[in-house]
Length: 552
Ligand code: UDP
Image 1 (cartoon, helix red, strand yellow):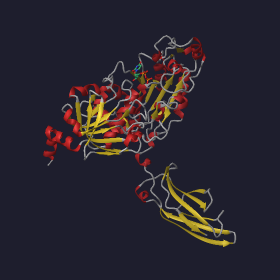
Image 2: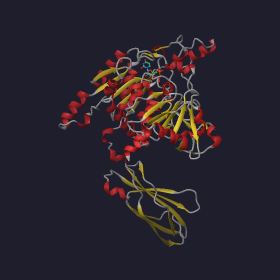
Image 3: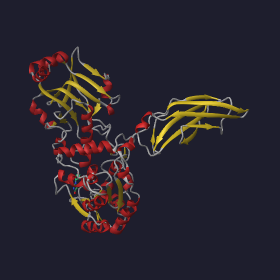
């Protein structure tokens, strides 16, 4: 049976017949174009027209069948960047009868993932917009396995980080420009179109100033799993100091000895002008080794090898800081910002480090001394040059000490300031480190079990009694959540909400025991609605049990 199926996949006449008989079939997830991923049988692409083609037959399906709403504005986003009007996907329609007049189709037998890379030249975009979303889209659909084919439709060439895209599957990814080599009409036997946005944490400021996404759905755990999978593909092993043998004393000794700080330096723009001095200061302050890495000098895998064992990563703001996702738990990131740039307004790396369970401590330093900045007004505009602007505008920018909030991507004042070189003021830098290290939590203590949420409390019930004409009692009791008996939890508390029926406020109580008699503010001959839930370690909330109706 299996044999037959796999042969059928590559048998040209069988494939052609299937296409002619059944046409294209599409079934999608997602109610909106922004959360949609579609699976196709026999989606075709015409390189001449640069259009995807859906072939209608009596047995073709299209779910959702949107009619012309498919163009309002699109069927789906082809990149992970939400609702970007240069990243929309749609297809043209033809009846299968038209195949007679068209070039002979070439079939792609591999299960294919079709997507747009958003900005493959920039490392932050590569990881955040493409690699993580593609990795987890592939985890969502089992047939997108190691043998899946990726097709990048944004139209760019390979770019500097293509080796990273190659790690996603064993097959060479295809670029749009290569598709024409396959003939005028290509048909993907099985394909998925679009990317999951579940793992993205940042919006770049196309409609409102940049910042963390409103509803972040990823935790450090998923980021680390992805990082480990990528490292395995790169043949890098994590140098995990925590799991070394030996006595506690010995461990402490070797720990300190093995520890090091990484300074990620940029060599062409946004320079640290006194890097040597900065490194000396770090060595002095922490009494451990400091190593530098740069994308210009090392291979990416060798950089990741170093970062994955570092206790601190120091770098100027910039895409190279996305490599913080390879840091071990408990590490520290120190991000440096040029003069006039407010660290609170540019937080892709802060947001990454602060994802729940990421367990990376984030600090930022900002140059506040104008004499320590070197500007580049005569460079091209995309590197922050301002010479092309009107005189008044140039003067306004030069006089301003803070870049006001702005939208992506060509704000000249922002580009001017962010592309400055900086002489880091060592005393204020060390001050940031000393202050920031005081508030560093002890991440090593947090274990995997500390992310387990309580179940509902069971068999919740209430008993009531009337004392006098204006006094009553309400006793609520319940059993522990089912999962608690298998867990070691430091602190178990219960939250009880009591609401008088018809009122829109409630009284909340936090209790340690499994029953309690309320008498304050409880009136006779009144109906109360009572909710009970369990809380582990102050912050892990369980669900409320079904509401109790308690009549006094
Ligand atoms: N880059 C680099 N060294 C430099 C300047 C840039 O390695 O001196 C890399 C950077 O990490 C990013 C790409 O080049 O992947 C584009 O850098 P750009 O400054 O345009 O973007 P940003 O770092 O601000 O996101």
